[in-house]
Image (cartoon, rainbow over all chains, first blue to last red):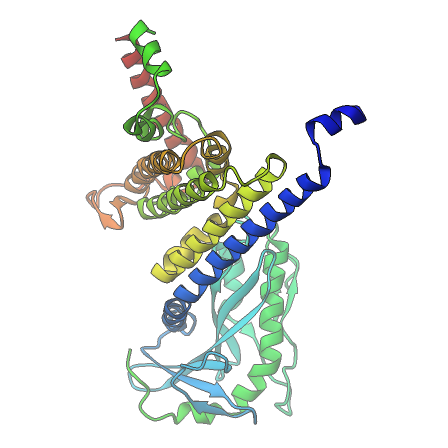
Length: 235
Length: 211
């Protein structure tokens, strides 16, 4: 296009750019407003529903329980019974069977997956010092690939008896959970990955690894607190 | 084509025409064969298909309305970016909405809700219709196309759930002696069912045209 033509069809290029800029910024502002409004409008209900879903998931990760009780981790590193309303606190969910016997504890953990933050729940039994269950609470992993972490049976079998044994002084985990490639699992503390969902399955191994290093020594040392918890609420 | 039909096409389409067009004559799935990704992926059960269809229909109507009302304000050069921004906004709103309805449903639909942004039905209606027509007409067009998509997805979802799980909307409808066709729930079942519906749709269309 010649310079003359440009001038004739677009009399003022700055005017054109200005228009584009105003349009984009204007639409951006409208969109931002709409998003903020709907976020604020649904926030409360989503939080309630998420909490309900989480409590239901506790029954999936700690087998053989019929009641749960929520505990929160205080700044001093002790667990105290909680109503579970303050979501900013670190919460754990103790599970009890029909005769009020403490069976295990569900721990929520999260970390970066492939697409977004992965939120998971895993069950821990202090008696056997193993992971006894695993459930994905929130995931946006690629359908058909990354979402295998929720469906792949070989992968889920990792969490039936994943060792979280503590070292002799009980202050740390002897062998922290680590992810390994598919077919390379040799030790009971390794999480065998999925071919085709490498990043997502590796992320799960790392999330449990990081969370358990912090939480398990604390939980184990206070397992009597959970055992003696009075009148766990019935579900 | 008969002369009356040609005259029909030349005439300014009525509101009902705009609506019916999306449902039947230009059905986004069965005729235009657009939006195949969610059609095949989320139609494994009737409830998922219906939820996905309604979510897409909502985004389609709302984005058509907003794009149409801003059509004289959006410069040609940045129209695509603007459309995507508007579509993405409504998808985000839908995502919050679905989460507020049911966490379980949100989990089932998973990443496909976010993928509504790139559903070509929505962008194609924005570019081909909403950017050239009035707000009212665009809303009707969006509603027609959206419900056409709901219809198509529900057709697929119903067949797949009945054959694959012996149920519809989670309610068992076939006797226990019925051996479920697991393949219908799997991705391959989506292709089979879609082929079946496309065949049926085109068969009746041809028959009607010949008559």
